[in-house]
Each structure stands twice: as C-alpha cells, then as structure tokens.
Image 1 (cartoon, rainbow, N blue to C red):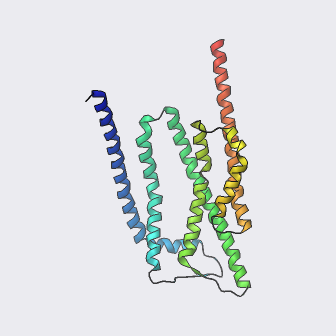
Image 2 (cartoon, rainbow, N blue to C red; image 1 turned 180 degrees about the vertical axis):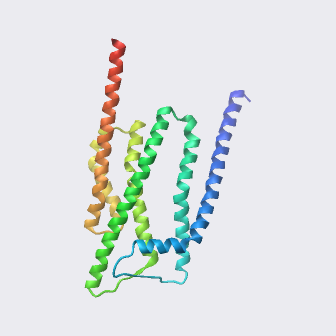
Image 3 (cartoon, rainbow, N blue to C red; image 1 turned 90 degrees about the vertical axis):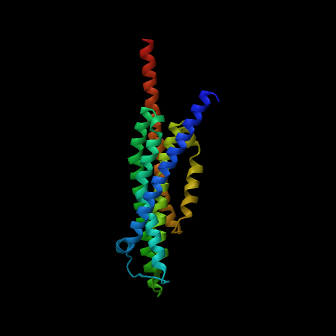
Length: 253
C-alpha cells in the first residue's frame, strides 16, 4: 500500500480514536452529574418551587411515584447543564489545530455572548411564564375554580419553555457564523426578513402559554435580536470593506 494512503488511514483512525475518547469522557461526567442531581433532587425541587411559587395555587402530586420521575428529570437537566462547558472544551480542543488565529478569536468572542444570550432568553421566558401563570391563577379564583396544579407538568412546562427560548436566543450566533462562513450575507437576511418573522411567530406559538398577548411579548425580543444581528454584521462588513480599500490604496501609493 502507498505510504501516503497509509498515513491518511492512520490520521483518520487517530481522529476516530480521539472522538471516541472524548465521547467516553463526556458520558462518564454525564453519569456522575446525573447521579448528583438525582440524589440532590429534593433540595433542588424545594428551591425551584419556592422561587416560582404562584399565589393562590396549591402544587400537588398525582402519583406516589411522581417524585421519582421528577428526580430523574432533575438529574438529566443537571447533567446537561454541567456537561455543557466540558463539551465546549472538547469541541475547541478537537478543532483548534484546524482553526486560524482569527477563527480562534471569534470562538472566544462568541462563546460568552452565546452564554449571555441563553441566560437572557431563559430569564425572559421564565418571567413571561410566571407572569401569565399568576394571571391565570387569579382568573380561575375569580371564577370560583380552585388552583390545584400537577407538580410535574407545572415545573416541566416552565423549565422546558424557558430553556427552549434560551436556545432560540442563540439564533444571532448561528446567523453570524453563517455570514462569516459566507454561506449567507446581510442582504439575504434583509430580503428574507418577512419569512424570518413568520418563522418566529410559528416557533413561539408552539411553546406555552398559547394566548395572543404572550405570543407577541415573546416574539418582540426575537425580532429585535434579528434586526440587531443585521445591523452589527452590516457595520462589521463595512469596516472590512474600508480596511480592504485602505490596504489597496497603500499598495498603489
């Protein structure tokens, strides 16, 4: 067999072995964090219920095994959150040799921005849901309906919706990366603005709560982020163009 082919096969297997090693590491950490979250579910759930306690609402369980289901969910959620920094480290460590200095700089700039956007999206979704649930509880009480809410559905809807909105807030990061990779450009984002806004309404409509006011309140910041993404990348592209023209002018002179 040709030496070049042997070397390519060797490099290929090294990459596979590296990926396998990193995957095993993530699985081990995931299991450790899952067990820790599962065993500490009692304290974590107590803290969450106190944090999001809605007035005039009684949180109840509908099954003797419901706490076990909740503890499993807490363990999985805890493991996912704590494994995220480790996954990012492994991703960068695997890709860094193939990244240029500029690409590495972009990675470390976008990483804290991505974390900030997730926290903002999660907090915003959490606040909107809490506000809507408080209104719903008061309306039910005025109608003479007692509020006995299932603890599993109550917590899962709030946390999952807030987490999904936090992920949706990553949209500008994805758009910026696609622009830097020259897959799309700012003109494309401007031309497809209507489709993007329609997609936002459709996506958010799939998340609870489903009333019209909450839909508008949750979509407005997404539209604002979309417009800010266009503006930031437009300014950035103009700076790149100005620098390029300055470089050409220096060469000519």
